[in-house]
Amino acid sequence: MKFEYLAKDKNGQKKEGFLEAENKKRVAEKLKEQKIWPIYINEIKNKKIKKKNFSGLFSIPLKEKMIFCRHLGVMIDSGLSMSNALDILGNQEENKGFKKVILTLGKDIKKGLSLADAMTKHPHAFNKVFTSMVRVGETGGSLNEILNILSLQLEKDHKLISKVRGALIYPVIIITVMIIIGILMMIFVVPKITDVFREFGAELPLLTRIVIGISDFMSQQILLTLGLIFVAVGGTIFFYKTPTGKKIFHKIFLRTPIVGTLVMKLNSARFSRILSSLLNSGVSLVESLKITSDTLGNYYFKKSILEASEDVQKGKSLSEILDTKNTPFPFLVIKMIKVGEDTGKTPEILNKLAGFYEEEVDQTTQNLSSVIEPVLMVAVGIAVAIFAIAIIKPIYSLMDLV
Image 1 (cartoon, rainbow, N blue to C red):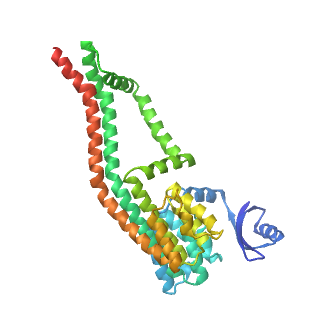
Image 2: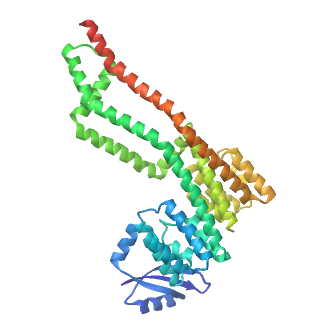
Image 3: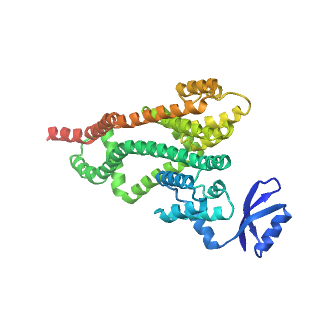
């Protein structure tokens, strides 16, 4: 049989893992032989393992976690015990995946785990920022305050992500519709026009011959065409998820007009907000930088902060480290961090900086539609012009010959 355990060593450090043995008593004996003392031991059945792994495939919406933090903070502040608060929140939760997570947290609390330790068992629901801040709150006796800070952070994240997604929906729909219409025309419309050209036997321009060649292939090999499109889209998505793909695509995003500005502001806002929250919670600068780097979406921002966490350990100031030629951070971020370091108010400065960039993201997303519309019109115009030159112009030439 397989058992899951949580134990403490002689230094009080918690250790968890799995052991195979005949029964719980034998597991406890094995642990004591390793000079660690069990806090709890649970038998793990095969069905449980599968279910647990399967649940990890689904992420919990930010809104659900925001409400959870807010309600848990209020309940703890009201004097309710942690296990009772978690049981109440778990039974009220409508999201089945998150409901299971919350109820499991309650069970682990009853077994003697801290909330932070219990949360580390659910990385798909609670990231490093979350667990680190909760751990600090439990250690310092200010968990309700930390939960309020976390709910605010999640609310800001939710608003930012919603605004960016909302701004991108329109252009994505337009581009997708354009591509679908283009494919349908190449498969069903162009072949009928091609028959007219063949009847006249006229010599066609190079562009027309290219369009007809592509159309012939697509109309005669519909399944193969759809398969190639599927492979191209799937291959692009797969490549994007690889380390090399992220480097290439994220570099393109940063250098693309409008998109690059939005990416820069979004990552600067997230960096400032999370680092400020962690420092205010009492987490060390080095650890805060490591945790913050995991939350940044762009590879180059993530890499810059991760390298900064290593250099800070060597005694360098954060502003000095970020003020390099290849830094993706804007000058304002570096300058404000420098001011914070000089005045000893880095968390406060970062908090104000986060507010500034969140407003900038809000303004950029509001203006995005008005900027993208003319770009899309130009793109549609170019597509129509190419089709007109390739297909319609030769038709008029044939009519003149008649």
